[in-house]
Image (cartoon, rainbow, N blue to C red; front, side):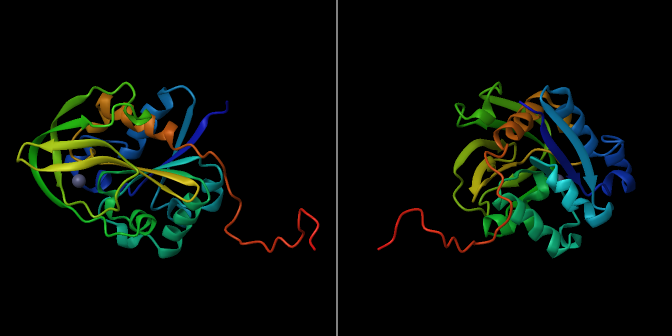
Length: 243
Ligand code: ZN
């Protein structure tokens, strides 16, 4: 089987502008994520960022992407509508996508799900416990039934998403809030996974359990088919003799 081709997309702005982020991810979140994906056999991850041509969403990049991993935070509004639509189109035609953390407000996430992605949040250095509530799901393979994260940004229900195909993880936060932190969807021919951990000032993408979830999600989201376009052909030749 050929390697799964992953593109990790990131804004890559905070890491260059805020010392507290650069301290944790000196080369950018995208590089930290691509590094652990590349250490896993059978995955070949590359990166693109918002300052690249076509904001990192060039057709040639997407042509060679089986699964996109998408991290975004402050610049959702800067991503041009045509590129958000391009991602929607790609997912509908089979590309997998893993949205991380604050990507819940990205244009592509909201358009794919048809909802706002709203939630409430708090930055208070909170302890968090991630529970695998669907431990038989392939994305939970090799992940403990629950694991603790020392610090994570709190995200709380109600989460503005449609009912997921599967809720794989639910997180509890020290302040008492809970959140559906790992959820799956299908949109046409493409698979979608959202996973909550990954605030930019905490080193959580170095956490082995979080890495395992993202690796599993990439493997799960591999396209079963790739549809070349979204045309509706007029299939005029009947297969049987017509009366
Ligand atoms: Zn955050």
